[in-house]
Amino acid sequence: MRIVGQQIAKYADGRKDTVGVTEALFIELLGAEQPLYALVTGDMVLVGQVVLEKLDLLVDCKKQRLIPNPDNPNYPVTYIL
Image (cartoon, rainbow, N blue to C red):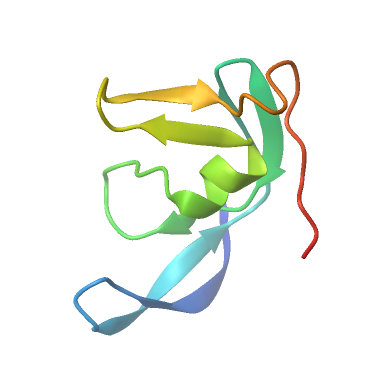
């Protein structure tokens, strides 16, 4: 994966930093796949809320797992608000 640019990122603790932005890549989780860009902040891969929204996946906190949206269990749906 190639870094093609930079972007300002704001962390949960309020600090801001310039991070690398990759070329488009395909992310697949639980059979759902979407082309997205990744922000490079270190050597750990983190899946954030934007990825979960694009893949239409929900977090089941009690069972500590991801689940397909029950309203669209067979395919991801993108919401336009």
